[in-house]
Image (cartoon, rainbow, N blue to C red; front, top):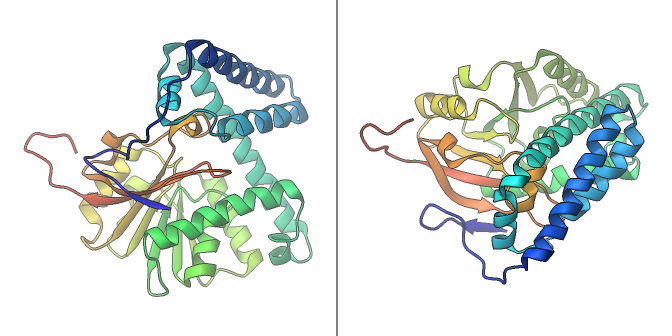
Length: 295
């Protein structure tokens, strides 16, 4: 559900603080699972890594800690190295999952049916992004007349496909890595979406956004500050800009988008992740910076 942003920050939720002993035990469990996933990856044990990451994800998405407790947890100095390791492992693992799905789509006889009639792991992954895309379509009020730019589309542009399926819009996927842009083009062609979905192999900070009515900046798109500076310089004033981020324990899965990187934009509303969702989405509004403020 969309939430308004008040006074430049997210709405605060009340709750009790966990005891230091409980937080310590929670920290030990999380660090143990991160270590197990990292060792499995280093030892070439994908099954062991997958098991450890599933266990870690179930802990991070369990909402065992309230908002304040989760904030305290991710701020602990002893957790900073583990958090960076966790983000790295999850990013690499998602890339491998995308590659596997792309290969499947290239080989199956009915690729469109594959997107719904597939194994449980694939189905759960796709369901997560379908729900996210549906929430974003509502958040940005995307319709058939819109032209959408998705910065950081990746090799498996499920978000773009869902925008098209649910809103009937046209999407340009922008991907900085040439091999992943090429993989996405093959997926689009195989699925028959080439008329409504175009891939652009480019750095998001070099794009002219003036022709887009909706711009989505992905959670892994970088460099964020340069992308938003380019948006401010080229996007139409009425363009709807949204950006993915993470909060609380979900920051161990993806690095959050810092408020400073959004300038000269700031959050106006948020679709907050809960349950099996990992990503939150911010609806942004451009603000006037004070003289001398960094853009």
